[in-house]
Length: 78
Image 1 (cartoon, rainbow, N blue to C red):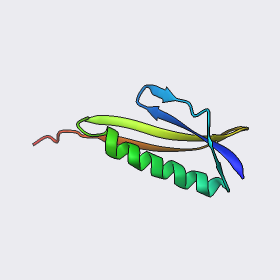
Image 2: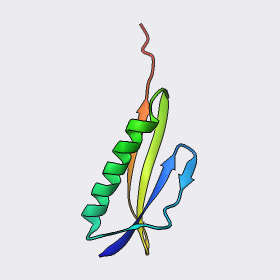
Image 3: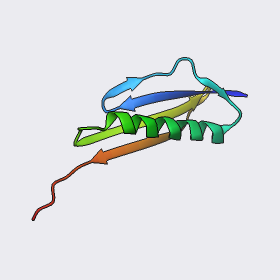
């Protein structure tokens, strides 16, 4: 098992994961990041015309991957 950390970027805010989670491989970390990001998007996007968030996955050696989500509402010219 390897320890992976899931740091959160929400607009200009950054939340560092100092605890991490022990997972069997990078694919498990990717699934965890995807699940976390989809849950965040469902809760945090409501009522905002524009938003970007990301889960940055790292191990003890540094960054491994980033899962990000951008949400934009634009008026169309008629």
